[in-house]
Image (cartoon, rainbow, N blue to C red; front, top):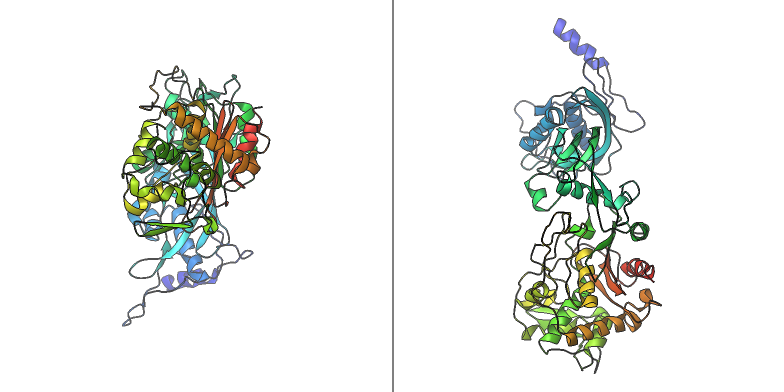
Length: 555
């Protein structure tokens, strides 16, 4: 009788729907939960009726399935029933480890979760709790999201497990840890001695993390206590720095001076903010000093660490190779047919245009793909790789700019992919830092590895190129870039910047994107810059105005 009475009492407590929003607020003793959609209020999985096999779920998830799976996971997590929460995901082992660390390693207590209205299979939710360590307690709040999918095998709705479910800054393999940071904080200074903060320059959050990781123990500061993301093996391989999420007690910062210009940095931040996915980097050709880096998305530094196909901006490197090999010359006639087939792929120009009787300079200025692809039969598979490494200092993974960076990749390829690499497609990958350096190399005549912190600070060795281009080749490249800036695809963006300037546009096709990534790299005087607008369209119309606006400030 007693057992039946308890069941009856439970059934009289009906789920409540609050404004159509699923709310999970469970906090230990005396806790309660609000559930939307009329789903079950516990984490039990319905079982098949006796004698009947349960049907495997197929097809799109219903709203009720998404809501129920999210409730099951969030409620169990919040009540501290971590094995049950993990079993509500498609990777219980990984989920158990990170959910356990959320409490034991990150020292997050009294966490509550409030889920927002699902969109398809995605359920946003907010997290509130406290972080307590060494007698210090601070509140913590952030938003995250989970996605419900059908589990392989039985089709049950479960949470698609990734570390980002626990916190959006986590990548798979990362962990959350609260304790003495081990690495003292740093106070970063611009080239004039002013302090750099992420509050003033949002793009520099990842840069400041990198500076701390590199120079924190060398700059004379003392460590504090904080909640931070500790990167796993895969993230370390991608050169991602640990990230501070909450500071419980301040350390004493050391000081690190950078080469950044506050004027150019502020302007770069304003320019990229006009686009959802834009990045730009400015360098000084004569020295390699980095003057600015800005990204409209602040969670990842595309400017320094992006790995994107650079499109036709790669034709600067390809042109230098063709000139050196006697396969082209700025003012000599050069073929630009409508199409050219190589390695089984048929390459074409934008709108299938052709230039009859044109020169290499004309093809460069109008960005004729076939003018470069047509030379593939005369090239070795490693020729472009060697040119990028030996002259432009790229693709050797040895840059030491002061924070993590990607140094470009120009892999040895054959057949059609080799031909595609000549126009910045195939396996070629770059970022704005790399392409700003390419323009700077043309302007100065020599490769200077870009750097954010002077090598004098820590006596590190900068990367070098094994050789320089001849004076004749440099002169032809400058003439081709100047012609492009005056009469070619870069003319509109570069209007009025004068004769001591040059540019190259690029559009890189990316699978799944309606529009290509728009690239632009240019120089003026002792300034060089490059930018990309992802899925923005032609580089002259998108990244071009960003880059040109910065160069225009220099004179």
